[in-house]
Length: 267
Image (cartoon, rainbow, N blue to C red; front, side, top):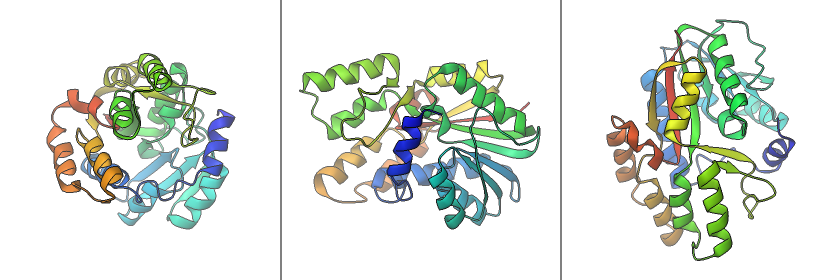
C-alpha cells in the first residue's frame, strides 16, 4: 500500500467523516439504503475490506450481520475494535487471507480509489469474488471523476489558473497525484473513476450483471454549497436524498454523484 495513504489516515481521523457534514450524512444514509436493499439477510457473513474505523461495520453488526473488517491502517483497526462489534485484521484488498467462498458478501467501500494502478483495482475485485460464495454479493465504491467539477465549483474559486490546471489534469487522467495533491492536506493520492471505467473494470475482473448507483445523487453539491455558505448543517437534505432515490433507475446519472456504488452478484 502506498505509504503516503497510510500516513494520511494515521493523521486524519475518519470517525466523524460521515456524521459531521450534510454530505457525509447523505453518503451514509444512501449507502445504508442501497446495501440494505441488496445484501442477503442477516446473519450473513460480511467481509468489510478497507473498512476504516468501522463506520459501516457498526450498523451492519447492529443489523445482525457477522462482520470481519480488514484495513491496512493499524489506527483504523484500533478504532474499529472499540467502535463496532466486528473482528478485525490488518490486510490488503489485493491479497486477502480469507478462504475461498467463505463469506456471503464483500464490501470494498474504500480500496478502489486508493489503488491508482488499474491492475491492482482489478486484482482487488477478483480477490473479493474469490472469498464470496456463489450467489453472494460484491459492493464496491468509487469516487466519481466528474464530481470534481461540482466540488471545486462549490468550495473553490475556478478563476485561479493553477486550480484550473490541476483540476484539468485530474479530469483527464483520473489521478490525484503527489506532490500535486490537495494543498490543504485533506486528501491523499487517489484515483477518480468515470462510471464507464468502473463498469469496464468490473467486467474485466469477471463480474457480470453489475448495477451502478450514484450514492449521493445529483443534488449533493447543492447541499454542500448551502452548508458552506449559510452554515445550515442539513440545508435541503430531504430534497437531496429524494433526488438520489429518484436517480437510482438511471445509471447514466451516477457520474453526477460524489461517489458511485457498483453492486454485483458472484456467479
